[in-house]
Length: 135
Image 1 (cartoon, rainbow, N blue to C red):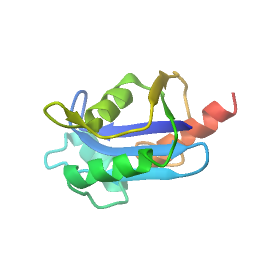
Image 2: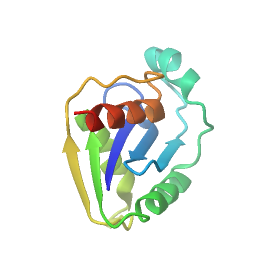
Image 3: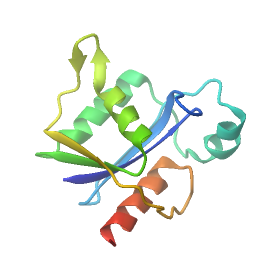
Image 4: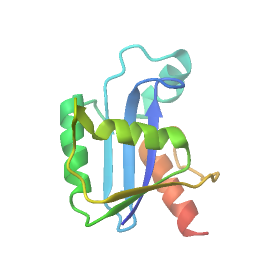
């Protein structure tokens, strides 16, 4: 199953704030993590449009694992490498442990996707899906 990803994070290399996964079949995952000290740009452009309350990292990982396990295999498609990095980091649950997932592959396709609400991970992932499906 092709699944399109977008994430928001607190500045370059910063902590994950939100992640959205939008599957070809229309199923969606969107969760938000707490960001206590957002940089000014993130505070002004990302935080006001998250449109969801944050959950704990533990709950985030449980929900992510449950979402992924509904598919026989998953091909994560991102338009930016750091989205893949944030996804892979979210799979790690501790020293030497990670989420159980179906077989995973990942691709980065550099495109300029339009979003209904730029810097909202869910809307951006929907835009990536739409743009890539129209190629």
